[in-house]
Image 1 (cartoon, rainbow, N blue to C red):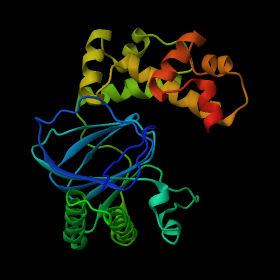
Image 2 (tube, one colour; image 1 turned 120 degrees about the vertical axis):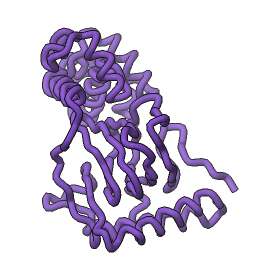
Image 3 (cartoon, rainbow, N blue to C red; image 1 turned 90 degrees about the vertical axis):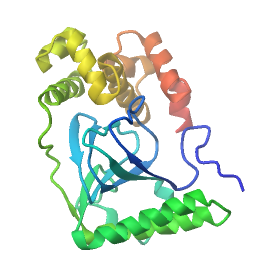
Length: 278
């Protein structure tokens, strides 16, 4: 049985589950950003997520739903953490489930933090254990089994989980200043900002900010700025008819050739090819 998970475009071909215990010795090599959804459940312990320009500490019974193409990075600062990650596409969801997953504005799957009520946590742990076992004992029935189990878990979430506040709490002082830098980048990426500008907004020297930002976010300050510019450029390529050069300039790239090079490095195709393919 072919147990392929990812396609040549970086998409996944089925529901995939990764359930592991991690501790502070587990350091992610870099940030994550992928074209599919991620549902993380914290079964035991705590971890810290850097998401876009915010930071959250997740604890026992917390779910984090991450939509496609959202920047995220995880650290395990508080001891061992049993965490289950479930990765899926919108195509993996039952049509009858979708109305329960939309918010009041009708939007499906924006970033959310949910907390399971204490009575349901044991059942969620049983579910993640069954899904992990299915992943381990993969056969020709497993893609369907995992899809059904995902839909069951999400349906139970709509019944047994509460939406948590999006305000981070108890974030370490230097992490707060890293967030100030990330927010400054998200607000000013269209301008010709420098490392000194970003550092000034955070209240750090450029060298110190560079080190602390990479520690907190798994990526350098300049690379994060390029990431934010590229993601917005990709959106504008699909949502406008403006020239590639105009999109590049509007998203903060002063050199359209450099833009084309970094765009192809991230997406695997040129901006023009990306626009035609979508």
